[in-house]
Every structure is written in C-alpha cells, then in structure tokens.
Figure 1 (cartoon, rainbow, N blue to C red):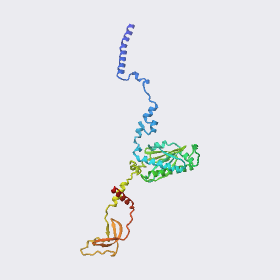
Figure 2 (figure 1 turned 180 degrees about the vertical axis):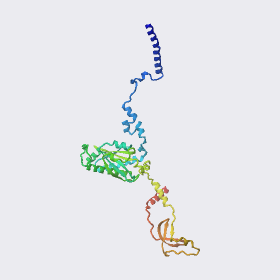
Figure 3 (figure 1 turned 90 degrees about the vertical axis):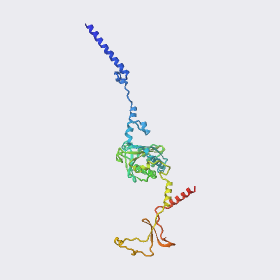
Length: 379
C-alpha cells in the first residue's frame, strides 16, 4: 500500500509541474514579467553623471549657458537678456571705455573683456558670491533704484599691488582671515567710481543716468537691494593686467532697468542709438514753413457786464490810452513785439519798433534743414 501511495503522489505532482512550466513559457512569449525578471542583476542602475544630466546639473551645460532637465523648468520664469538686444551693445561700449579709463587710472597695460551676460535670481547670486569680496551698492538716480558691483579678492589685491608700486611678475600678497583696511577700501571705492563713470557714459546715448555709490559692504546679507526671487542681469567683466587681474560683476535687477526697457528692446542701428537726422530735418522744414496767425491788439479793458448790456448804436467807448501808444503784436497769448499803427496805401499797417523775442530754439537747425532740402531738390 505504501508503494501505491507514492506512485499516486508522483502521478498528481507531474501535471502540476507541467502546468507551471507551460505558464512560464506563455508569460515569456507574451513579454510578461516572470519570476526571473525580479532578479536584481537584471535591473539597470543610473550612475551619478546620468542623474546630474537628468536633473539639469551638468557642469558643462551650465558653463555653456544652457540648462536642461528639472533646472530648466525651475528657471523657465527668468527673462533672457537676449530679449534686450541693446544691452549687449551698451556693455561692449563699456568695455572699450573701461580699457582706456583703467589704463589712465593704473598707468599700466590693462585689458578688459566681457566674460558673459546672464539672467540670474538675486538670491542665488548672493549665495554664490565667493568671499572675501567687496560689494558696492550704487544708486541710479534717474531710474530711482539700485544696482550692485562685486569686486573679487584677486582683483582687489592686484589693483592695490599696482597702485602702490608692486613689482611685476610677483604674486600679490594675500592675508586671509582679516577684513580689508581703510586704504584698501578707499582704493576699491575709487576703482568702482571709475567704472561707474564709464557705465554712465555707456548708457548716456540711451538714457542719461547718474550712478552714485551708496555704500560698501563685505557681507552679502547687508547688500540686499532686491527680493531673493527677483530676476536680475549679471554682467561679468574680466580685468587683466599682464600677470595679475580679476573679475568685477555688475548686477542690475530688472526693476532697475524697467524705465528704459522700451529703449533696450530696440534693435541696434549704427551709432545713432535710435536718432534719425532725416526725420529731424524734415520736421524742422515743416515747422519753418508752417503758417501762423498774428493779431494786432490796440487795447484791452474789463468793463462790467451791465454796462455792456446798456450799449446802443452811437455810444462811444473811451480807450484809456494815448493816440501815439504802441500796439502789441501777439501770436495767441504770446507777445511777439510792439509797433506803431500806420497806413500803407489802402491798408492798415504796423511798424515794428522792438526786436522780436529770441526763441529758446536756435535757427541753426532750420538753416541746416533748408540747405538739405535745396540739395535734395537739386539732385
């Protein structure tokens, strides 16, 4: 009986095993996940480079100015400086001006280059400033807002070394862990004044502005001029003095340049910065040829309304003036001159006795416009 029981058990288990094998083959043919798919050896693990690329933290992309992945989505609200094409022209002009000004300031061979122009969030930039550094908060008087200029430590020590007669070819002495002295701070302030003066001249064709230094700070917490989430334009300039130099960064919040946003969005047309001399000459010509009405006023007086209502035909109005009194010549409410009334033939005339009032606008532009009009007619 024992042998018969074992044989029956083997007979029952054989179909069950066959059914399991058939089920596994069916799942494998259908592409399903069988028991063998749960093997950890078959799973693919991402390395650190692939994770950084997925999240958008690739250093090579960041240096190239391109952002991908999650970081691109987070920073999608930032306004690109490329939408303000005139900014690049302004800062290119600033580089040329700084090259000349810093050569005169240091009496050394100075080369200034524009590193990059990017859009950043104010809070992210303040957290990324390498310390020690000097942060100069300046105010744009006409725009009624502030900007920030950051001078890194390498440029500070290089500039001090040059201004105080350091030898070339020797590395500037840096003493870490101490605040900047009064002499060093004053020299950095003087350097910033030179750069801001050049920035005023660079912005002058677009909008006259005055940059005045408000304060110097060494702690970024005390140089907050905008909210951390606000967008700003960051301009990095590299100053090279042969074997020494450093970087200076100018930060302009978008709220600061908002008054001239319309001008910055224009396309660059030569060195005119939006001016059109043809239109100016045409406007001057049309103004010079415009016809105006001129009135000769004999006398003006105020009388009561009841006296005016009682006037009848034949009544006489006495004028409180002499027979040889001057007559005022007016254009609207503006008195142009005065003269004496007379007669030329059958017409009443006025002889001008006083010089015309000099207008605020000179006649040079009208004369120039007439010359250009004659030249165009001759052609």
